[in-house]
Image (tube, rainbow, N blue to C red):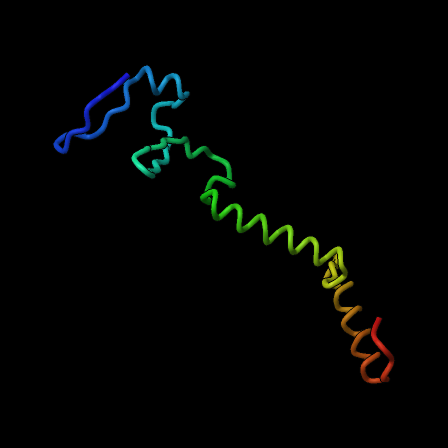
Length: 102
């Protein structure tokens, strides 16, 4: 199906195309344009869709890096505030007594 773009009217996507794409009335859509191509995509309702694909790549890379550093022992994960407090107090005692840290 074809159409002609005009400056005086909005671009209208025919109902048959919207049905084929599975768009519902009132559904939020995202428009992207690059090199003469317009892409229309449903924004959806999931939390992950609040980021662009480029932002999601950066976020996922940071998550992978953080998990890797946790596995390497660069960070400690505590199950409670009391557990964290006890560890900090233990490290402070070791520093005061000059015992090497693990």
